[in-house]
Image 1 (cartoon, helix red, strand yellow):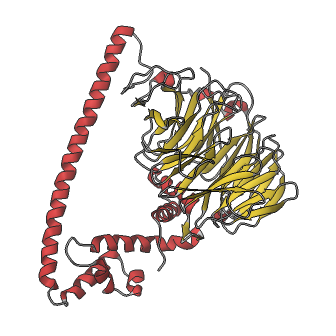
Image 2: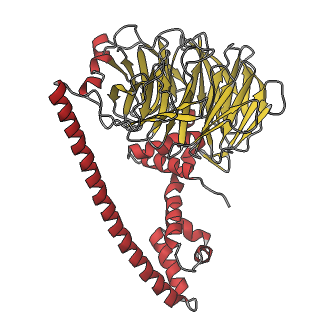
Image 3: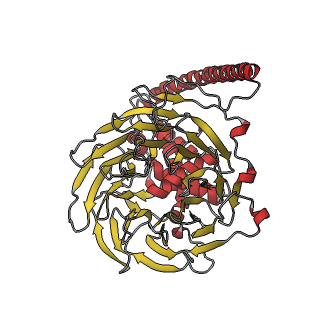
Length: 561
């Protein structure tokens, strides 16, 4: 019997509602997760073929939940009263009624059913009372917070004559270290409930890039120039030329210079051609894109398609160039990773170790790399080797992201098991188990600091972004929490360090982008858009930040302090 994961169900619900004309931020979460994990038993299922199944799937799950009783009536017994055809042709109410009627004819079940009904009625009443009590308490707490916040702001204005830059509460008032990271073992908890008007990035410093006709899932600056690449669910990637200097609206500058990289011929917007991921080579001369159709494509900066790489049998979820630029690495829903010889335009080696879809890949050096999967495993592989050179087992949930530190000596991973872990090649077990988040951790990033970077005198730290709406910064030497950044209200999908390591940008489904100063430990700039944010990235100079949104736009923000 086939099983359906909650992630897939979220994805199905989103697609069904989207195609019915209904959109809501809550379902964007399911869709983005669905991009990465749309499988049944590890096999790709075309989204279009499942739309008609959504309602029946939901009905079945609801029926399953409603039929489960606190008494000794077994769930399997309830389902046994139904035929497979009933599940397809009947709605939940009809199914419940059928079970109820058939159970009446079973000796001894009538009295049991009455007891269960009375018990459920009592539980519903108690639940309603508890819910009302909890809501009242929550409203009281929120009112107290607002009142206290207003009092603090008023006191501050009375003494200084100006507004507070942010409203913050610190558990520990630690003094920052040399690069702004607090020294000592106690973390600093930054609870920013609001940002003042002076932190808002003015519209004059924002360029809104319009043209995509579906959500924009990925964006990346060229490492050498002013080109910004974006990938969307509309079957295209786009190359935007962003002028140096201050951003201005397109209305002031005239038509934007943009190249459209079409992933499907003609006007047929096949959903299987969604652009899910993209990456520039180190020289900024080639852009690689990964698509839902399982193909990787390589483009030059003139928008010309240079190569189409076909071997995967499922969507490509991640792809990365090695530093030398001669190999491209792709990870797919077909459970494999492939290294491509770019010059020869052919695959060099396919790695088939995972038991589930490959969710992320990252190069350690020019010939070895790590892969992560829904099977909870991490493999370190090397070109020419037929088996993994290292196996990291320890996560209890899908491993969403793996990233090597700047020197390639430490590997960080994050998972649906609510933990991030740090590994090294010298031991099998993780070095640190980072467990301060309350929900799934979606992504992680290393700071561009420490040995082997342009900022060697600053401390190396790890940032993690979670569905619990927080970003956390970690001391990777001690495995301790340094900062908890609590400025968002919804899941945080993306974080990015500035090139100098002094600032961190975070983008959330709450439609806001925050820029945090690690020296001051606060939000210094913020921008609110009109859709959930899937990715944020800095340009090489560190004076511009791009963010891609669920409302089909890309925004470029000027950053000046």
